[in-house]
Length: 131
Image (cartoon, rainbow, N blue to C red; front, top):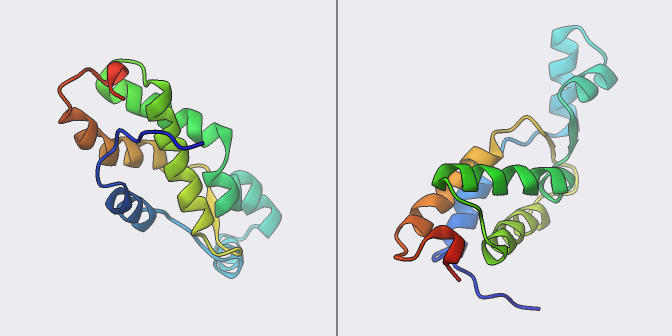
């Protein structure tokens, strides 16, 4: 099912969003854990590290991004806009190499709200009514 997308310049937005992702390889995470004097297991648990595609595709991150966008505008995000957020996160997840890792502590909700906000702010209708 295809939805009308209220976000103009979606390809640019996706490119800017993926450039802002903080990903690491398992080797990099292991090296950081070694330097910090902790086991890899402890580092993964402490930072809530998972595969980047899993973090980006999670309901937890979608909810956080939708909440951040709504907070930025002081009004609820409508279903179409939520679908746009989901599409951006899914596209970013699909673009990740299988071995990229990232943490849930990335500030992705704020990043996505900052990137989407100006595109939505230029619309004449309120955020909750845009289609």
